[in-house]
Length: 284
Image 1 (spheres, rainbow, N blue to C red):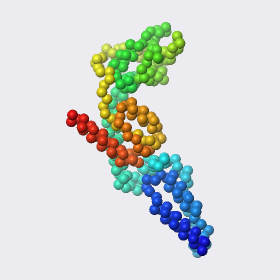
Image 2: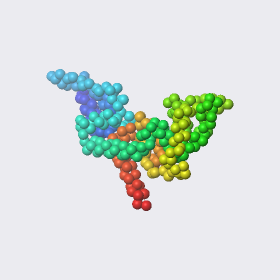
Image 3: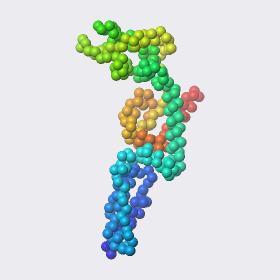
Image 4: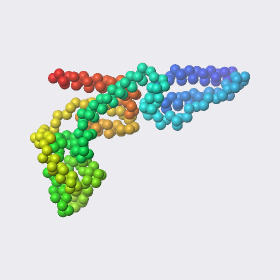
């Protein structure tokens, strides 16, 4: 009688496990729940109840084979892609189409931001520094050249304390590329600029690609940012910093780096809000 009671209890536990499983549950939680039920099954009683059958105890999936592919309740991109090609559902097809749409949108945004991705390296670095200071490229370069003074070595130098955030990042990059060097003197930190690069900077000011009277604080274009709070590739704090610097409208969701797979409704909702706001601005 005790064996029958234990078997019924194990069967009831298995039934509850099957009824309670959800497709979006993380691999970690599913394996833990299965392991608890599996360990409670009286396998000796099962063998005694079925003596005529050769019963082999099933192998429990190794937790270590799956734990690295899940993150705090959200399935990883690798698992999602595996499901997409092995057992696709309407949810997978929608997520895949949404991901493709986002890729196209990101490409168009990158194309629109041409100065940051195309052209000579020095031009792209200057454009990035100007973007950090929220000024036009030529205004940024003009202000930087004004701060340069001759050094005892005959090279142009600038006092590190006078640099703006964008200028400081530019000189840190130039130092890493061997086009600038740190120098200490008079109790201050200076940056020495490569002579050829200094000459190109001065010459480029003669080419008025942009008006020197341009507005140094151009109006920001409206933007939106979806922060994935459990992203392990781009830290959430870094996402918040980038979105704050861009002046974006921020929405945070609990999701991994592949948030368009794990949270497709949140992504679609944010895109719809951004499109509606853009349409409203266009009609003004």
